[in-house]
Amino acid sequence: MATSVERLAAECAGTLLLVTAVIGSGIMGDRLSADTGVALLANTGATAAALYVLISLLGPISGAHFNPVVSAVMAARGAMSPIAAGAYTIAQIAGGLLGTLLAHAMFDLPLLQTSTTLRVGVGQFIAEILATFCLLAVILRGSRLPGASMPTLVSLTIASAYWFTASTSFANPAVTIARAFTDTFAGIAPANVPAFIVAQCLGGALAFLANRSR
Image (cartoon, rainbow, N blue to C red; front, side, top):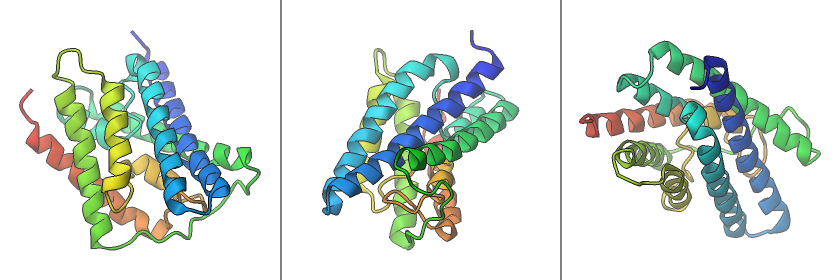
């Protein structure tokens, strides 16, 4: 069984690499194509692939949450203590911020940036509620299915939500915070972050209530 330090390290490293994949693929897609749709397609594929690998490798160590809402819901279900969920959240946010720096370093961009990409409006708020609800519902329901592949379920959920939600499915407070510090394709203006996080927490709460039976 993994130690507490190993679990926290897995959450930090997993979120770091996830954010690196999200931001790095956004930069690459934007550089290689003037077509926003093509760039989003590249961003989607890289994110989904990274999620599949990271969940497969780190799931046995920490559960591969990489997401404060997932950790909070697991604590609410009694699968982990609130203190452990809080520690996971700190590790996830730290990992996400480091992932932003790593992506910038790889592409020779200024390490410290603030996004100017506005993501605002009722539609965006609804989209984040829906995206997070779908993600948590898949995790909670999928864990009950015999032989279900959680890496496959989660990565396909995020890949599809990139395209059917108006927000392109952030669905993760740690990733949202990290993306506020990149003025690239994947960025979100800091002023829009609180609304996204509120929506994500609402989506997680709704998924918890809808899947309370064990």
